[in-house]
Length: 430
Image (tube, rainbow, N blue to C red; front, top):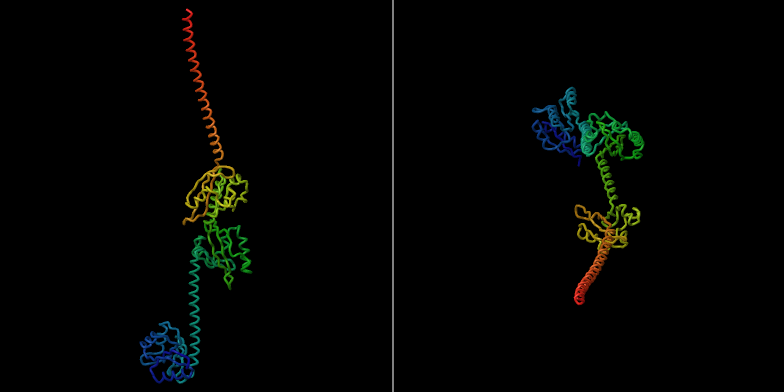
């Protein structure tokens, strides 16, 4: 079996078409063919399937080779078109070649047909491969451009001489310059704060020698068109096989500001926490101390380093489990604030236990605050003792009063008796 070949033959002579087919078979081909004689028939054949080659007579009663060539060109079908004619002159053949015909073969010299056809088929395949490669490259560039434009961060490609050759839309927003103002016109060094420039140029030089000899990620200060300074994380690398660099620039100015504000807020909060006059600790869900204030260090006699990561009940109660009456037990069951009075480290404290949970209700932290009421309890006990002694004294006074009153009454009665006796005695003397 020969090499498959789809061949469209434009020929009004059946015998000439058979001669062409015989020559193709002798050249090692197994042709599938259609023979047409008019423009309408040619269009129908072109629309019905794809063809590898067109072999056309030059002059026919209702059609000719030049018109057939134009029709093929109008359809933008890039396959070899060879004129096979017995009446074409040298000048006409040259004009046909200028018009786009691949070759011309005289019918009385068909031995040239197969070699000419093989050559044109090879060139057609080369053209097709190049076209496919160009289309693939174009598609690749389109895809690359799409990815480059939609990375979500400012991105640039720059040359070994530091000139920016490509910039995306996010880069326009970051820099304040349009792509047209940047691409091929500006170096990336123009956007770097002077304090960072020497370091970054050194990295650039090292990367030219060995791409792995300089950091691929680091922070620097970016200066935009308005002169505003932005905190930026740079990710840069050499594009393999080239001296070009691709870099992404992530603006972290807001994040850095938020981090600083959060750090300050945390420091303020810790300052307040440390300034609390009462002992206070923050525990994790396993009851380990993750933060303690100075009041805790003072009453326990331990340093901050000695307190951190210790179980709170080991520090305050010297036990391996939360003691009875500890509000933490109730809090773990109820997930609510619990308060209890406890004896701790030789003193008496009101201990509050507050859970901190996430959005799903899972325990994250526990806040313990203890209020020392030892002096108050002692004062209350002293007051109770004083009240008891006072009551005893009052009772004694009441008893003395009763005795004194009774004695006074008796003295009064004796006086009255004496007065009566005295009066009677005076009567008697008379």
